[in-house]
Image (cartoon, rainbow, N blue to C red; front, side, top):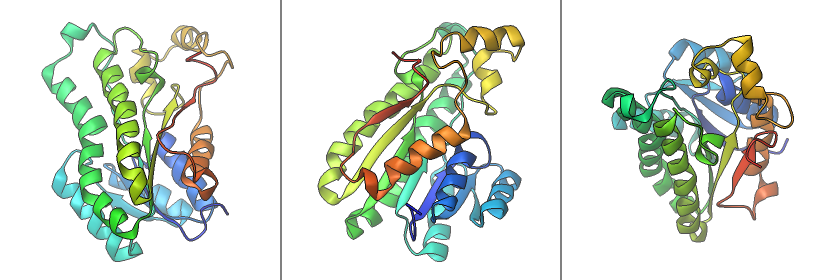
Length: 246
């Protein structure tokens, strides 16, 4: 029970990596707010783990503030925030991606971290305690062609993580990131362009361990970085990638 009596928000927790993280946190004793833009998906996971469902658009300031109001009303304070919600554009040459797709990727993947930080960090500073985990991607470490703006958004996430960590460490707040390789999540088909056996084989050939990452892999890594066992670790962008970035 490494997260006993901890309170946590996991965004994008209605499916995929976020659901895996929420499940692991609950198993380890945390009280979890399952936040997702899909209200039904959030409620399903919350019911499964005994958490609290919250519908949120992480790119919208008022929606993030509403999530904060729910958190303070139900849990009193938040010890852990996992910025997991993310989107991508379909693989295509960088000069053909629409402005709407570009804006959406950076709003959900980057602006959300800014909005959530502005909303929750003041309370963490006041308590001199808190842990933030940003879910980036191997795309931000070892970019692949035709996902350039998604790659860039995840590179932003890694740099933001280190900057946040060095600024907030004196206030007792730790900030780390995870860089997963693609996994069995709703975004997999988008990354590959199409989900076919041939495309899967091509993708798996780039992962030395020979399999996709799973929500359980992410939950285990997230649990460690957000637990007191990692109290000396901040500013780390951990690759959970089966050797993809070596």
